[in-house]
Length: 106
Image (cartoon, rainbow, N blue to C red; front, side, top):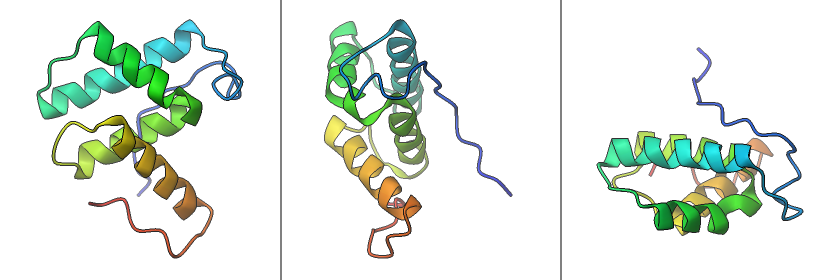
């Protein structure tokens, strides 16, 4: 059965890599963080959401969304940005067929 992963679509997929943000990216990150905060019962502030966006936008909002979804399934607490970055890296390696990448179930 296919896995249901929330979609966090934005405009230009290369915009984050080129340093170009748009309102869709901000809205998508907000939804990601609100979902995480609902699962882990954490209060979000505007400053926290802005910091997460700045620290993670180079990965692409879609990749962060997938990592956040995996974290909601397997994580034990609200993730710090480095935890989401690690999940994106592991998910990417696994998707590329790297057999040495650790599973994202911790």
